[in-house]
Length: 328
Image (cartoon, rainbow, N blue to C red; front, side, top):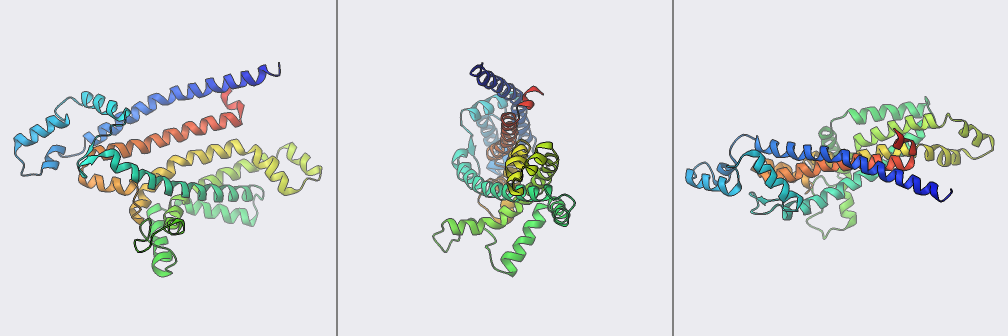
């Protein structure tokens, strides 16, 4: 009986993960269709844009045929989806080389910035949420709540510009643009200095969201009977919070934190443009101006897939920590 119970729980978890994965497939398919059509409905002709306004109509027609633009849209979608699924992302008209060679270095830089923002928002958000949730209606709780509301309400581009003005232009503490200093060989310290301002800009809203929801979860958990029992036994308040409070709020906390992954990757697009960070956001901005359809499609698709994957990971992680979710 004891050995059968873990096996049954494992089978139940596997079924839950499989069901969630099946539900994700239609969403993923819909995303690919929307991404494909959004680029196709952009004004102007891609072939005409590539060759220039003075190109010969016969050359334009030949290029449209070469690119498959003269086919019905559903045939174009099938070809594009099949190539994308096999790793063939197409050819960049802007750089005259395969899209994969263009986006992977940019994607790595975006992941570096998103990871730094994720660590910052998770550490600060959970710490603030736990502090406020264990001291509800105190001066510290009200002050942090007000600050989180302000952080969630301020536009990201305005916050980025203000941070740049204060810490880069006025105080000169941090660099304002780029990923490394071109005058120095670089290194982890140089990277962290350049990452500080864009990471804070991106992490502002996720930090506010995490802190508010963790606060609510901690307030609810700290009212349970086992918390009063632990205190009655003489356990230190710090251990009560960490062992019993935060541990039982972990399913909610992990779910909230995981859901911010997609937001951080998507939010980094605007911060990269403001701070000239050489990532996918800057590349997307440049590709839109150049009408580089292949690059626009892949970057948009990768951002959307990240959101879907983040939701899937959040569901699975919460179901592992809280088996009751599998029965919902």
